[in-house]
Length: 127
Image (cartoon, rainbow, N blue to C red; front, side, top):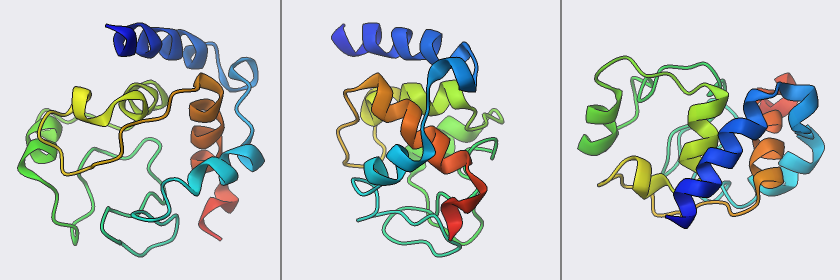
């Protein structure tokens, strides 16, 4: 229940628009360290898929990555990783995609999520 409330707040927070949401790409770079064990922002897949170009990309769309069946099923109807879907996912990945292989429990702070999304959107994130 608590995660659903946080997710709802995040959707409202991020749907206000990038400048109103307050996402800071530089701060997001620091938040990304929590993701960097499994993901990269370059063209290289690790344990998890590359997050380069994730914002706006179709879910489970990297051809040379072996997604879990749960993630492939989640993607089956053409979902995309827009800012709102990413924000909801980052709160509780396993709640949004039951059975996902992603073990990360989620980010608790809405500002961390906004900052991380700003970093992932930033064209410099892949460098």
